[in-house]
Image 1 (cartoon, rainbow, N blue to C red):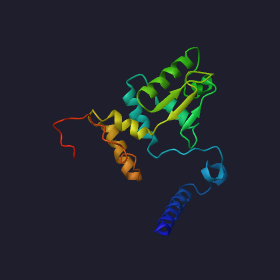
Image 2: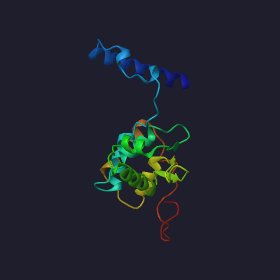
Image 3: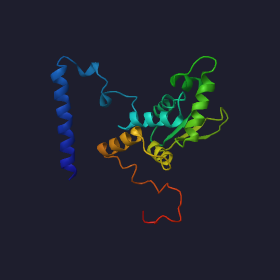
Image 4: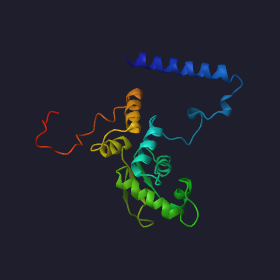
Length: 185
């Protein structure tokens, strides 16, 4: 079975390359940002755009979080852990500069923590030195446990199914206990 999946992936890769070459026949690989031919890449879920949209929605109007979260994601490795040694640098990468840049960035970090996207531990350099990045789909599901789905969350769930992600399958029941509710529900 693994062989047939591998062949399908290769076939899909070949089809995309053929389509690209049809529209851009003069494009050379050296002019493109091809992950397998360069270094300095990280893994990004195919649902990241929708995760960002839901995250910003959950945070509230005028308090977008995604640029801060994405900056953390671009620094994380497979351990889901980031050590922050220079807050000014991360604030700038997140889009915050000037005299209030670091203050604004810290507020965004605290909000990410409040919403359950990250956990924070202090270190000698800063109160935000060590960051653990939780599964964002789980944090979003927890936020929607007691609220109706909206378009952004519905779109995220549909995209998760489309890409074959199983993140929503391993979440415990987040609904509050209700004595009248059948426990099998």
